[in-house]
Length: 414
Picture (cartoon, rainbow, N blue to C red):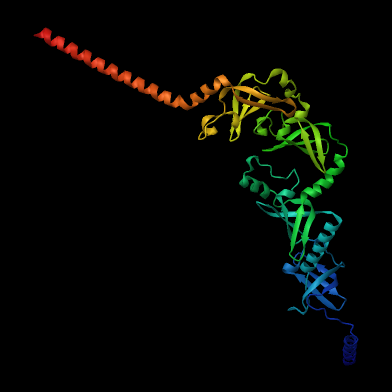
């Protein structure tokens, strides 16, 4: 009886094979299976109730949510990497399936201009290595949102790299701006994703509006200010900080300072502000205070190859162009003048509307000023020589007096 049943089962199995009921998957093929058991070390799948497959080791890919939260009964796809392992099971992989799914999602994100989250795994001087599922991409420094852009005073590269490395392990919300699956190249932009979020908040602001905010960062070219309930960030360029010329924004502000400014431009999500627009323009009264031909004392603020920046007062600065200094061919401006020199200048032009004032040496001071700079060293040397000669003369005079006194003493003794 038992033998008869066994023979019948063999016949049924043979019929199944003959009827192509069992199709053996091939390496590289993606198949569907139902989860029998799932743990951190392996996942077993039932393939059509006939075959058993297993996913383990590096092929057990958990970074995609679909693979990381499997439970018995779930249906999932896997790729065949071996038709029979040491236990007679199909050796399967989630990794290659996960990679294909990740590329598919990246393509969709780029096409639909959707934002995704990436994890920062490393940093270099150009930007951040960013991983989406198991695909590595690059987030350039230029594509960072303002809040994460490394605003390092002086542009110290080592400090910039330190700032970038501080993001390792964090997640950024980004857009896909460049994708090449063949080259396995993906470029992300946090700035684009940030701009999309900022745009609705900016709708209530217009050019000409006054805002009050907090200085969040200071760079060589200006200060960043956060304002409004939505923490919108704007830039006050160095030229918009004050009416007078300044060399560095640090002269006027520190991080954390409260500041008022006027919106002068909105370009997408970029906001540009002006602090000086809310200040009285000192140049409006410059024509009443200064006249062409007037001789005024000025303090040299900075020496440039093309001339001298000169402060007439705290708010009005002018330029003495090198052509107005009447220098000789071999003379170098940096050797003749230095910051903080106080010199009398004559005003040769003034344009309040353009905030410009031109200077030259006052005619009655020009020769004296140049001569003093050229000969001061020589006069000092001559003076030192005269002092030395006088000392020598006094020494000789003392010696002569001693000789006369000795001779008189000898005469008296005789």
